[in-house]
Length: 275
Image (tube, rainbow, N blue to C red; front, top):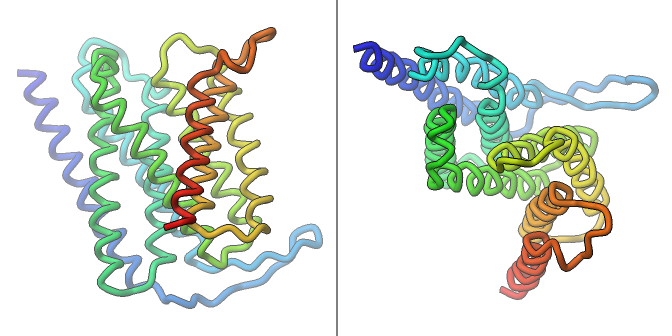
């Protein structure tokens, strides 16, 4: 009976969260396409921001807070004490997925295609929320399908963010923050789904920092948005794989996953540039 009660509680809370997200994403359509920019100086550096600049972060924070409310309805807490530390890794992708979809919707032209992006993005976020709920239980980690969904959708969203930022007129300072946060969350979530690896947090910090530096450098080189996104997405996965498996005196050919992903990335970049 208690598990049935938890299941009903989860459905109710999950439905409320999805309704909130659907409404919030839809309201982005009403935001002006050319917002009024406000300029201000910090330590001699001029920043130009608008209300739209804060929407992705605010919506992501609210979503992460709501996810805590939803995830605490999991039956696992019937036998364990509520533990925010255990739930925290499962909040990263909902946070970054909401932020990425918000950025993409803000940057997209207000047309029929906007609603296609809205529908597809909302579906991805909904599936991610469900997958993260299941993976809270250690038994859920054995369900390979959910792990694959989380990893593939997280990198897919990172790809969308990279393309959207390349197409946007957002200043490089703001892009730096977006890339640093998103790459860290995606990287850390990938590592958290791999048992037996140490220094996951440090590895995610190093990988995200290096990726952000590459993103800034490539921003000033003429690269089409799609190739730009593919390159950064493949580079993030390669860095994460290499750094997580790095050992002293280990030869380069002993990192097959990183090598294969590097080759695949190069092939995709070349192929997409041809077609």
